[in-house]
Image (cartoon, rainbow, N blue to C red; front, side, top):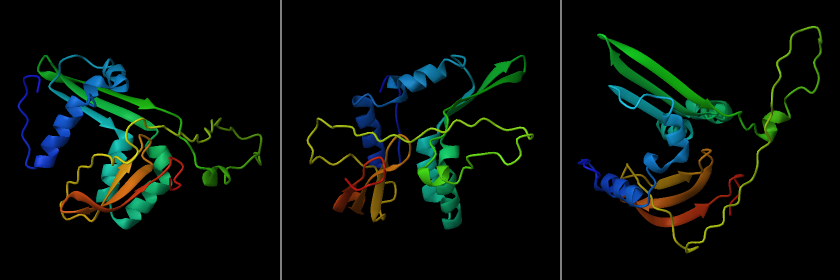
Length: 196
């Protein structure tokens, strides 16, 4: 693809990469990524890019139970750093380092908002202005076949279930698996967490 040869140890990885390339779902077609990438030099020895909501879901699957609970509790404050980048550029026998991040005010769930005090007990103390963003429900109509199931890429062929996520890392669907393929119940969720 574009003068690159792609290798993988799993055929579903190659299929997923080819499908994303053909469907123009690569970073080269992401307006958010291209805008963020302008913060960096065009050439470097190393460039690392993190999309935190996507990374959050991947890391959560690897975490132990107490860590997953902590991650869920702190999710609004973790994924508010939506993009992060790191770059090393050789310069006179050293490396020049660039680090950038994109921060969006966290969307705080109503259960957490209810615990925020509405007044300050001691007005003489310095206070911190906090902007609370109310969550919004997004209902995206899909003009495709309503019975078509989303593409899945199960890295673990012995996994019994696979989950897909919205861009803000809330769960979009779960599907039962057999040998890495869809086989069984499919449950889809609205972005507010209710079953659709």
